[in-house]
Length: 123
Image (cartoon, rainbow, N blue to C red; front, side, top):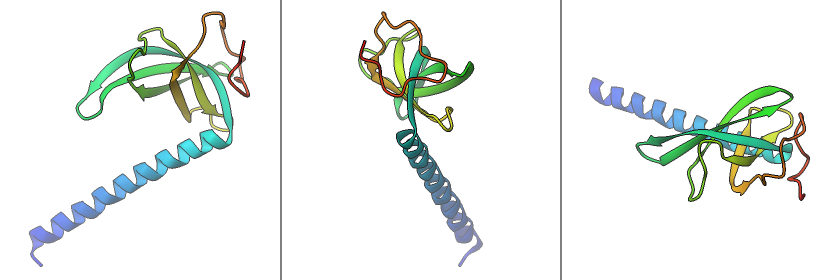
């Protein structure tokens, strides 16, 4: 095997490892959020274009007076900046979260409890 071929195989193995690590990490984050769910209000503040995935919308939320950030892919009708959407986060690790652009927060709900809700409120 030529030295150049070894180099390409080495790079291929590294790339596969990085992709596998990223996929596994994303799966574990979603699993943790699903197993320990809490809900709060996320506020959108910016959108940015990406080369491959289109528009990403950044938002922030608070849990126990600590600010966290999350993002999601733009879907039709998402308001930014200052859109208000429910965020599902892990009660064990609040930095693990999913913003729910399909669930806008009604204007009558002004703020979330410090530790979040057990379920999305119906009022």
